Length: 181
Image 1 (cartoon, rainbow, N blue to C red):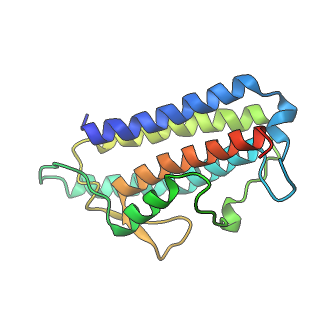
Image 2: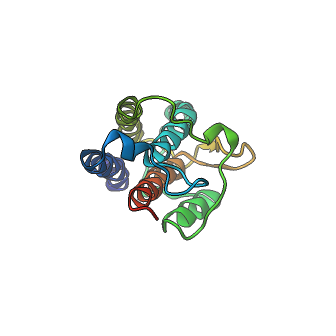
C-alpha cells in the first residue's frame, strides 16, 4: 500500500487502540459523566465520531467509485487541496480552535456505552477498508462535499486525513472529560 495511505490507516488504527485503552479504564457511569453542563461526556465524544463517520463514509465510497472510473493515470504523491489542508491543519492541535458542530452531529448518547463503542469499532473497520481500497486510485483528484457544510468541498484523500485527525481530537476531548477538564 502507498506509504501515505498506510499512515492514514495507522491513524485510524491508533485511534481505535486509544479508545480501547480508555475503555478499559472507565466504568459505565464514567462514560456518561459530563465535566460541565455545556461539555460532552466521553461517550458523547465517541457518538459524535460515529455520527460523523455515518455521514461521511457514503461520500467517501462515492468518491472512491468515481476515482475507479477515472483511474488510469499513475498516482505518485497524494496531496490535500486547499480547503482540505486548512481543515486538517486546524484540527491537528486539540483544544486550540473550538467550533460548534451542526445539529445533525450533536451526540445523543441515549444508547448503552457498549453499543456506541461497538459501532465505533465497526466504523473504524469501514474507514480502514476505504483507505485500503484507495490504494492506487487518484483520490486526490476527486472532490466530495463536507457533511458539515455542503458548500465546502475537498478531495477524498483530504477527507480521509481529516477524519483521522478529527477522531484523535475528540478522543483527546474524551480523555479530558474523564480528567474533569
